[in-house]
Length: 490
Image 1: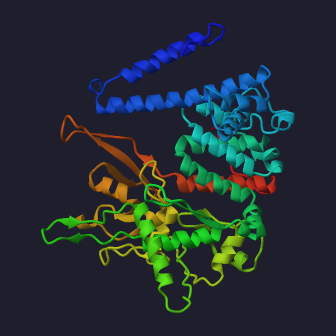
Image 2: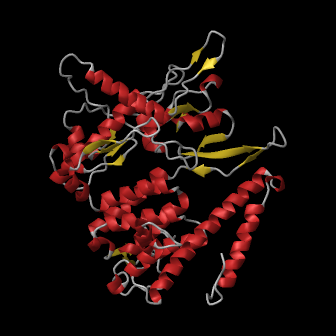
Image 3: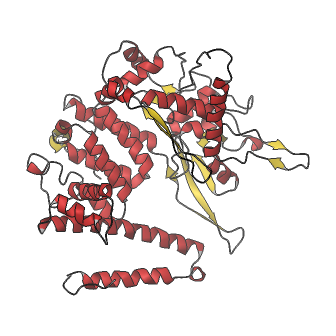
């Protein structure tokens, strides 16, 4: 591209273009495995910083006189050719990360949420957060009631203990920034949903009772293309839960078998293929019934307290802490629907309650043990993996063949991919003194067989971060009536 001499950043952009050309001209022969990984990591940080620069230029475009509608048309025209939806997302992100806004009693004064996510914008500019994290935070901010996110909350100072007034958006910004620097966007979105449900528990209740929501349900069979058809379904929350759990129960891989030639035969299907086969099998089973089939409810694992169950049965509105394995928090109305007609089972996560330590008496984890591990691990414990507990396998540490025990403190959840990675010695898992789990990757040298590089241990912080999100959400919703948690700096 030829840069105009009238453009003030023309020399800078020309230098950037030359630098990118050098990256494209690099060859694998000049890298080792570790140096190539460092190069990818460094470039990702630069790409995040480039996204921050893009948002800055959009703010500059507004300051020189371009309105939002004019900027949207400009971004959609050649040579930019951004979609209208992407243009709006870019403008929203540029607005909420505006670092020039000073709080004067309301976020951005008359500009609404302008500057509400300045900390996250700083993290993006530093390369420690991605644009995907910022998009998650923008959606979360829009889902929180205006009176909450533009209000104030009183918290005690972490050093002096004196009551200090904070703007609620600043606390939200700090929490979302911590999630962005610790987790991938998928996990950050899950934790953000915990926050939204805690702050506005009636939101999902309203959706549950909304007659228009049921009217929007539907199934569309797409046209034949390349010998395949695509199904698109719009489901309400409880229907989706029942479908997910029914498919998950029927989508287990076929057992490992030993063929006549002595070779180990494993299920060759991917998880997507197993899920589809399970759905087809369920449909065929129902269609083959000679009489109207009696619906057998899918097994939905709901983790809830006794108080949650009592509130759901009494149809009392308000927040509940019930969560569904692999789905996350559910509203009070959805919890009441699931509890109605359910078989309740008492499961304790301490060895003094349910039998969670079985020693060498059995190899496979019990349902109670899997529920306890789902609460403790939150899913696969491999760094960066977001696989839900229901799709994970219970792995013995050490493995069963080497004397491992079927005890809660000797098993962790690993998805099938990372379970194989552990047996291939690419992943290590250990228990911390507080019985939480942490893992690390092991990279083996391709040039020097037997030589490996171990990466830092990463603690599974999802359960703690979930509790932190709920605590902040409860504090913001209470508006200063309960003892607040201590504020932490980003």
